[in-house]
Length: 160
Image 1: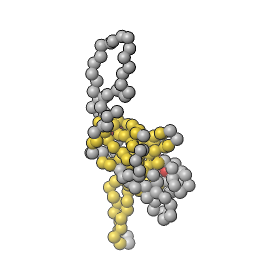
Image 2: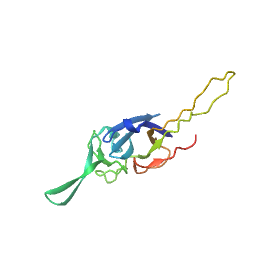
Image 3: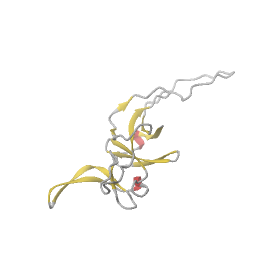
Image 4: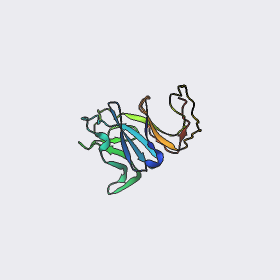
């Protein structure tokens, strides 16, 4: 299943969107030019994972010194604070806990073609060609767990 989340220009860096696909709730995060999508269900105890705070990685080479990454790469579940990597879904608090499910995210250019084609009727109206050249953020739930992709990569739209 493919889910169109938003127009690219309406999804600024640092924001997230929660989308519904049937019974499935998915959080889509934009971190700089990278996009990540996670199941909005914390594997620890079922909390709304994608509503939690995001934070950067912290690295330390010795006590008293630390460096923060520039981009936020972790999300903490609002219920118990368990942290998960946005790219892989890996948990860092429960070694035996399964990772949060991740999904592929791509930035695609719209084709402007109507879905499903036309059904001929008895009358003919004058028509004009329409082309959409804006980019959209699209989540693909049909594959397995994948890493986020950079927004700079453009995939050609598939024929429908």
